[in-house]
Length: 163
Image (cartoon, rainbow, N blue to C red; front, side, top):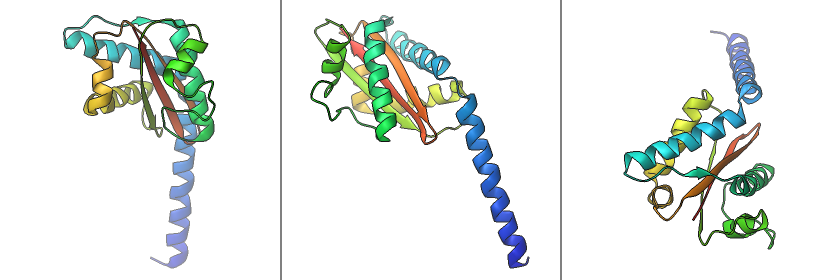
């Protein structure tokens, strides 16, 4: 194969890859994904003999704030720069949650597959991580919300739990 043909083939692969990436980016339904992750977290809790979590809108607003912050910074971490929103408890309190304890799982991933596949892989990743698993299966948590933000780089996911 000549170098010109090889180069043309490489350019074609790059263009197709970019178009596929943009298709997933544009068509990915963040709201659907958030609810699927929440459902799957509750499935894991029930499977392990725990009560399902109750959706809490205050925790959702705090989680959404953090997901959008991570997306804007292109990072995946629990602490923000601002003192006002530094820790998960700070964010939960700011948005009106008054429970005694708060826990947080974060996950950042590229676009691959449907919302269903992404939700399944997100919860699987948390279940394989001892700290994240402990949060999800902690019987002291009764309330939770899942929020996500998307950029061209991927999906930034936050599970915020409260009790």
